[in-house]
Length: 445
Image (cartoon, rainbow, N blue to C red; front, side, top):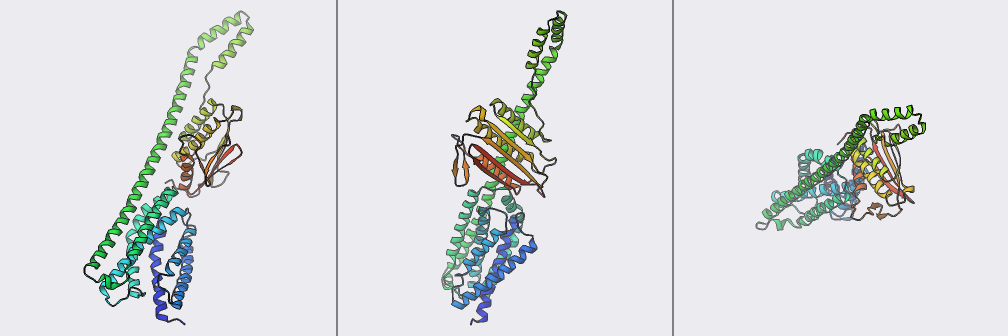
């Protein structure tokens, strides 16, 4: 049998999980797998089960109050990760960051309990300590709700570089471990001399430092994204400039031929009057061959996407690459022209470069852009290549000397920005790219 009062005290100590989970879910508001009411009911059930089981086992076997709290916290993380539509790097970073912040609340609560309740014991769960921790955690949740909703959501939705998120998770884990190490072992130590003031000052500085690191992380990421956006914009402008120059050359050629048309007609009349049928046929053959070809094709309604596709279509023709393209881009597509051009540009740039390494007779690029009458945009490409690949795990690396392999990463990040996905694979000497972007409810970021 267990005593009711210690059990209730242990049960109450788990309530600090509520403000922590609220903070965790705030930046994930657009990535929830379940509607809020269903998620709330599911969390309530998991919370009741874990808190009751943890409290019972702690009291039944006389365990330290933190012995089961941390394993239970891991289970809460697994639940959290399963209920959001992001990869492990982002969910882990957010969860560890919030745990680090809440550990400050726990240490501040311990300091307050030491100051106002001299007889309290640090190694015992007390309702006073729990109330202080819950109060500070709730205050923290209210204070940070707006920045997490506005700025945290933007980071989660638009930035998907896993290694950056993992680095930040390790950094936040450092703050968490420091806070665990700062937990006082005995209140009597805090009451000696200026230890209490020094302890509070250290907590304040560490808390400020963590917020500063989070702010700096946001600024760095926003700068990286702005630079990437600017690079894509410059790339589109360069493609459009080349397309404009090609159009101007075509117009100049047709203008010259119109100017020479009078002389052409006079030459044909002279040969006709002389009855030179063979000369007329030969003259017309040479004239047709000299006519300029309009290399501009209207693949879709987007001028920017047209410019990108025409640029690579011309590059493919110059390198003897056979192209089989089917472009069925819906009007008013919610995916921005810049992002579409970024995806298509990276796919086709890699494809054209890969085709150059094989005999001209084997060069081909297939590209399909369609919705298939579904609320999804599918971009499917297949190009021939020499069959040589470099991989790190499941990721493909560039085989070009000096290549960074960022093209495929950029495609993946852009697709994930809209809640979609990108998959790359090869079969023999054919490299395939499959991109899916949901259009139902997509709002351009």
